[in-house]
Structures are given as C-alpha cells and as structure tokens.
Length: 416
Image 1 (cartoon, one colour):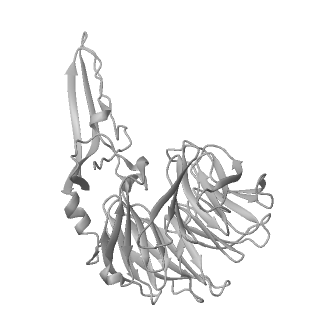
Image 2 (cartoon, rainbow, N blue to C red; image 1 turned 135 degrees about the horizontal axis):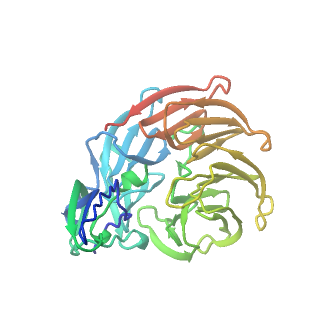
Image 3 (cartoon, rainbow, N blue to C red; image 1 turned 90 degrees about the vertical axis):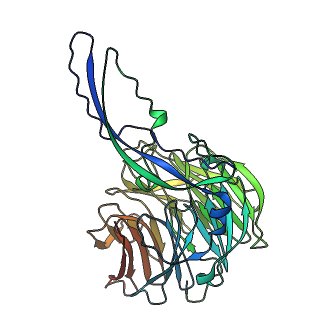
C-alpha cells in the first residue's frame, strides 16, 4: 500500500528582487522543502513496539490511563511516561509509529494511526508493547500524494532542505509549487485515577473517542465507527459522512460532540454502530475543539490557522435541547487551543498567553482564578486535582487539589 505525505503548499520567506532591463528580469526566492525518507513496510511494522526513550521534540496529543501518560510525537510515534509521581515523571520508552497523530487507550489496548492505517497494540506491559493488529486504509484523508512510493515502503522521516534560487529570463517565472513541500506536520501543529477507569482520558484536540465497545474517529469529512468488543481485534463497523472540515471529537455520556471549522455537531449514539446527528451549532469559520458537561458545551475559536478565521474567543452553548443548542455567552481570549473541565474549574490553553484556570460555577460570569504565563500551551487534561498540559517547550503538570493554591508540580522539557 502506498503511503504518501501531502504538505501545505506555499512559499516561505519569498523575496522578489526585480530589475527591468528591456524584457529581462532577475528573481530571487527562498524556500524550505522536505525530502521523504523511506523504510520498507515490513521494517516499519516490525519496529512498532517498546523502544528506548527518546527526547521529546514535537509533542502533539496526549492520553492518560493508570499511572502512564502516552504523548504523541507528531508523525513519529508515542512517548511512554511513567507518572506514578506527578512531581517527577519519567520518560521510560517510545513506540515508533511513523505518521502517528492520534491515540486512544482502553484497558490494556492502545489504538493509533499509522498514516492511513489503524494499529492495535497490547500495552499491558508498557515497557514491552506488542503490536496485535493493523487494518489498512482506515483513514483515507491521510493519503499523501506527490511521492513515488511503491507498495512496499512507508515514509519514516523527512530531511529538511533550505534553498535560495536566483533566476533570470525574459518572461515572468512560474514557480511549480507542486514540486516543493513546505511544511512538516510539526510546523503545522505549531490513570491512576481514583476509582479507576478502563478507558482513560483524551485531550480536547483528539480525533479518536472511546465509548463503551466502540472507537469513533473523525477525518475531514467522515466519522468511522470501529467495533472494539474484542479489544485486540477491532472491526470497522460503519462510516458516517460528515461536513467537510471536521477536526475534533469529544464523548459525553451517549453523545459525540464533533468540532469542525464552521460549527459544532452533536451525534446521538443510541445505536452505537450508526450514530445520528441530533443537533448542531454554527459559528464563523475558525479552528475549534469542543468539550461538554451535562448542561453546556464549551468551544474555543482561534485565528492564525488554515481555517482562515479571525476570532479568538470561548463560546459557551446551552445543550439542554440538543436539537437547538443556544449560545449563552462569549468571552474574549488571546489564541485559545485545547480545554478541559473538572467540576467547576475550566482550564483553557490560550496559546502564548499560557494556561488560564477559570471558576465556571456561573457560566455567565467566568472568574479567572489563576494564569500561568511564560509558556505557549496546546492541550490540557484536568482530572482528580491534576492538570497535564502540552506546551511548546514541554509537558507540564499542575496541582489544583487546593483550588486556592493551584501550582506547578513538574515539567518535562522539550529538546530543540
């Protein structure tokens, strides 16, 4: 099966130096492109297992279960972090999964994407993870065109090239952007729970959601339903068409809250194999994750992305009537990303404005209780008095067991 990588096209740092001498020109431009490095499919799949820990360089999404944090290294794999002591977490291993962006864990089974494929792993011993199954072509939106790979190879890495070109000629040049691939996914992405849980917790930026015996995944325009009744032998049960631009999914009770770049969609899972849309809430074209509790949905909207929006705010939506969600209140923010809620505390990753913690007892009057500045935040999971935050420079943990003394416990730094 071919594994291609598509990257956003565009010129980085282009400078035009034009001088007209009769019909000639001189044109100088600079750009960065990335050359794919291939490994055989057999070699890649054989290496999907616990390997020695590596430095965290480009963290993405995270998942928490038991005493472990599983942290995605964008397009590389999954870091295994022993969090038995949140004040001193230990990076203990790495699972090599090229093309990995999303993960979910139920019991002793992890589900992860490998470009277009769904990988199932036995993590009963996190230091000896074993691959149990791979299903091909589950995520068609992850097909990456533009490279001539044969069916026996997968892109395992990228080599960066910085190039400056000066051209002279008699006609305006046509820059063939189809031959230059500008952005890596890294740039684009710029428990022991008390009482226990067999499923664990995902962040608000997740595209995977677990509910009972099903794994739900979203792509740009579809919802995949995967039957995981037999955890180590998942079966694709259904594909539901969605509007284009879907980005995140969040499970709450028997509902799925799906965030897209033009709205929130609520799906009922009364029939878990065939979710049906129960309602929607539209907003301006922006990138957004969504979380929910029993009464409200919380949506962050931000600019500066491919979604071409211009808002930076939190929207709180009343979901008492799923068929007609109603906007309750908007709050201005700086550049919000992921968010999480535990009890009456609402945690928002506000980009370069750091982590903000609000008292959301009254959703009409959010009260800022604490702000941690000096870090650029991406996603957060808050539970049981502990908030775990993915930031540009590291993985942070904060204690909020005393809501009047919310404090940083630890940081695992990112290596440049």
